Image (cartoon, rainbow, N blue to C red; front, side, top):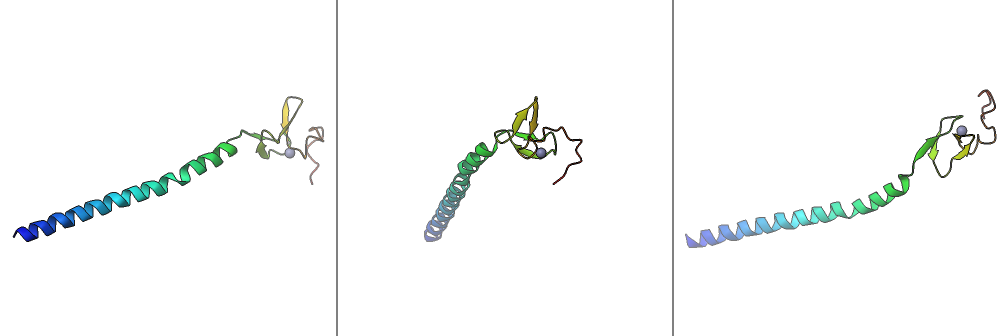
Length: 88
Ligand SMILES: [Zn+2]
């Protein structure tokens, strides 16, 4: 009888240890990509602005501000002066 008890305790201990190890492993896997993703998000978190002419979204650093409005690089030259009929 005592042997069975020992076996049961050992098996329980092994199961507990495996589950603990498994959780640590999962947590480690979950933690590794997160900072990388946040870093990427941080770079991409730059404010997006819409071109006043074509409405395309572009990062604020690439947008050109002219006359209080935001333009993409293609349309800053036009300055929005056209009636919007010009298309490439
Ligand atoms: Zn545009």
